[in-house]
Length: 283
Image 1 (cartoon, helix red, strand yellow):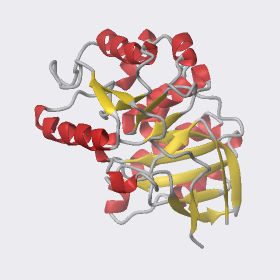
Image 2: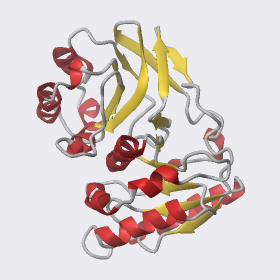
Image 3: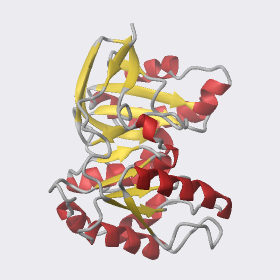
């Protein structure tokens, strides 16, 4: 049976007057300029002013700036009291390059105008930063690509449909995101403590061999013995080939409750979800 969840989330853009735009992963191609300008106009119509990092577009291969430059720009937005939220508009592979240069003590103290923790928004490779920030500070962040935002989604951005694959209830603080990118944190101090967590997994690329490898690594790390349940988003390439992720996950997850949603992942109409906040799902 399919259920609808809003996860107890607040209105997604409430209280955001000014947002910083960054690219912590791969720099954008020059051809993305029109899309970024559209986003700025859409946000302006919603009453949100945007301030752009000087490191948005790829200059050196895939980099928009050095790891230090990208980290410094991100920290500048965290430290700026006039910036209420940070929207990362990138994706790709290199977000973990900036981790050693972030000041997590400053991130932990950063607040928006409402006195709440300043949130980073991003998806895909930004799974790395969202989970590292949560692991190091306890602060939540939003798994969502703002380049896809439209005003029509404002009231339903955090709403998603789901159904249970096995079990009928699960709850916990949400961690995870893109399975490949989450596992880049394995063995580092930035990997989140997954005990009692509700683990979100999704992917854009990867077929059965890659998924078996990822799930095997997670099994060998003891993750399935720690978590309270698994929420599966979309697995774009795998599902495009007519394959399903659910039977694979069941082979590794034992009797853990597992739910599936088609609304969280890499699609342009995907919903958002907060990493680092409590969620309860039931059939």
